[in-house]
Length: 202
Length: 224
Ligand SMILES: [Zn+2]
Image (cartoon, rainbow over all chains, first blue to last red; front, side):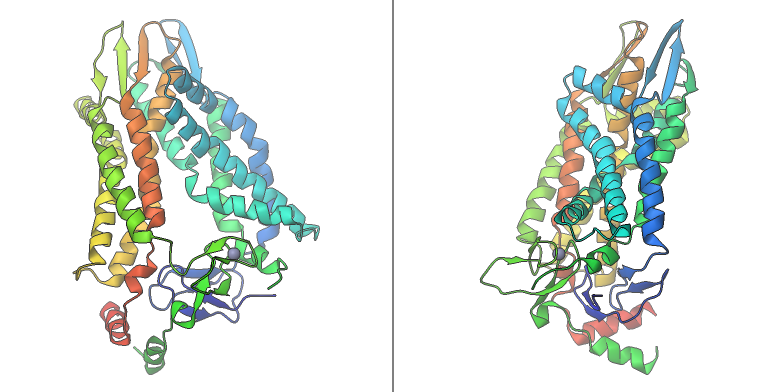
């Protein structure tokens, strides 16, 4: 059953959206906040993108992003070794934050999107587990900071470039692709369509 | 502005006035009763007409983030040691160092992300909170837009903390150069978290709640 009446999240105006085509956006007449946007081929696209993202997860997190050579000593840093190094310097709180923002949140988002769309395709989406995953997705959404981390990599490179010889590793490519996959979920995943399709008892 | 647009403006009804509330997770409109706890029948999330205790929580969290902003900038975020020597750098002294080295674009990025964004976020939240009590010179649209930007850019203040993590990991093995993270990083991370919680606890619908039809009409005509 498709829901037709909505309230604007930002100003609470009641809006009736009767028909909306793929690629169209319904916005609030009072505050112009987007109420609803119907996405192109959401299920297939999300499935492909989240699948790719999950494949990239291990190399993006564990492969070295860049390495540095200084007086014949070479060292490299990956996302996970950065977290480990902070943990060793007893900055447990900061290490945990980076783990949550850059490892756990994106992983939950990708897994949730993947399982939910896969279940949708095979008509198994009435299972309570899917509902739970969609809720997880909703809750980690504002805590994912991969793009900020990527700019952090660039800043570190520029800060160090006069000090030592720097080189980029395969991990950086994997990380960038991983980030693009996670960011694309915002464009492809139509959460509203999936919610609309769930049965519920009043 | 056409005539039929005018009529829609005068017809604006809020969910609250109809006794309805929208589930913030799955967007289902639900009839709520004031005396009991209401749960969404579709996703089981708790539903409130407005974010529960929005103003108190937002005030408290904004004040806490302002307090955390002080140690975040006063304590060193990291120390770079060349041959065992080096001075601890706070966020601002790190930016000054970048400027001295002539790295202007990167100094600007770090300055905006680590200093301007969190400060603007905290001030913005204060302005929004105060504007709910006193008459404000900003229109409701402007304030709603302000709230959107506060939510959107807040995460960028984590930038420098990420840089520290990478530098610490990268330079860990080298005997010549060593990077040590400082207490400022913890205060900084705490501040970022607090500002995100503060922005999430602000309910933009409060900005519109006392709107009457005349106001709505004026706001829309101003914009055209
Ligand atoms: Zn719900």
